[in-house]
Amino acid sequence: MSRITLRERANKASVFRSRTLVCVVEKPKFINNLMGIVRTAEALGVGKVYLIDEGRLKLPKNWQSMRDNPKLVSLSSSGIKWLYLRKFSSTAECLQHLAKKKFINVGTSPHPLGKKNIPLFEGKYTQHHLAIWFGNETRGLSQEALEACDFCIQIPMYGIIESMNLSSSASIVLNYIVEKRHAFSRRKIHKK
Image (cartoon, rainbow, N blue to C red; front, top):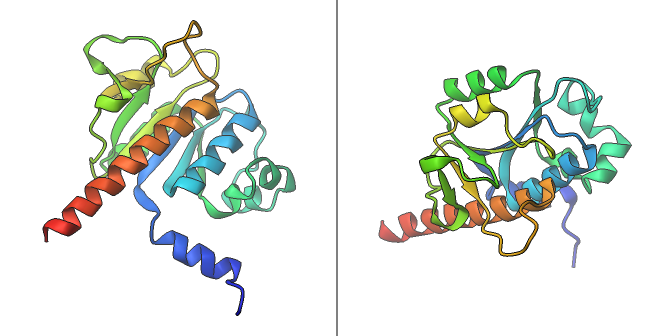
């Protein structure tokens, strides 16, 4: 019996990648959190990760250089090799790019933000082009990002602590949204 090659595995996995689902990480403080998100996003089949970074993380300028960086490969468990990461120098630049591609923006926030905030499990995530935004570990999303979002979601929490680690919350949110999108696609296929 022959072993499946890494390229064959990548080709097989690409069928399930949601090219219209983007994870946006705005100004993270810690490279470990960002690479944890890259790892999770790749494992779940998220289309791309967009990073808004003003130079704090000192990442290589382009994705190919990131893919060749042993530290980033290690921190992401090789997720950076398989999932495209694009850097933007500002929130405005990223929002303009997403608007051109007609993406719906959905933010994440542990704090109620009025009528725009809903629990994760009550949201509809089947919009064709969807960008899920995650903010800085200390401050969360910027006001600029929050204002651009159609709505914000929060993970229901029942303990005393009211926030989670950035990569942990991204794992929960992305897993739920990917599952909802796959279930929606399966229903559409079965209706035909």
